[in-house]
Length: 310
Image 1: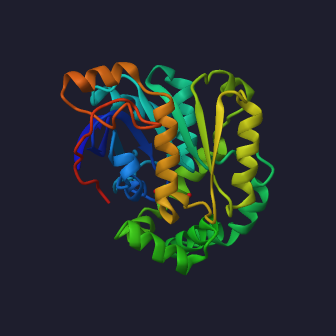
Image 2 (image 1 turned 90 degrees about the horizontal axis):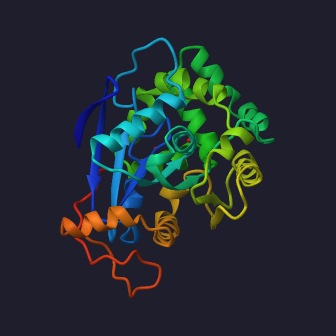
Image 3 (image 1 turned 180 degrees about the horizontal axis):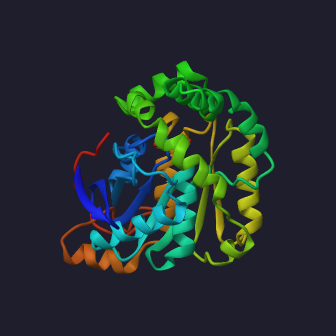
């Protein structure tokens, strides 16, 4: 992984593959959770995947004020500029999906499409019920039990319970459980307050004109299902496409990375980035052939191995 100073913060990032660029924005408690997805052939064969750890996500938890989603979005836009990427497909999971939406509002020039994996909208009807279930986790954090708070929260948000959630995380992101617990202060002290303060309503939705893929697990919490319905009502129906993943909940891209990767790759292929593809050809990079259904029209590529995100 490499590092860059972005808007005064040190961000760690990793770029793998070639083809249309895809910026992957993980969720607050979990870094690198998109790694199993980028290893899937649907993504590895034809896309330049950009994973990064957000401000304060890589061990720097200093700072008294929460980092706003607008700041996270500004960092994402600046990282793309640092990498020489003019426009990208942008995918986000959970709070990462909220940051992706804010990126499309504040920096539309860099967002070609949005793939939203269960964006959490605090104005959706199921939010109150969710946070009631998460109450013990919040109480544990307030009492100083950071490890217990993170275990309890991940058990609730994943929909799996703690033990099954822990096993899933360790399978796909070795060391991810310890990392999440070590960064509990960042999540409870920054991401959750920033989520509560974040607003996405008709005015913000009107600023988004890019195609949107809404990815939802069929077994997810009602809050995320309600958020998906609200997202549809806010955005133009012609603009939003749905992708349902059977038998999974909120950690859908780790529970079943293959169908999530296929759904995203097929969506991106329906909306190729022409300028980036021309640049890729000039650089001798490529992806899948044009005569394959649902592909971007680039030549086959070879990708580097990826790095190992509620």
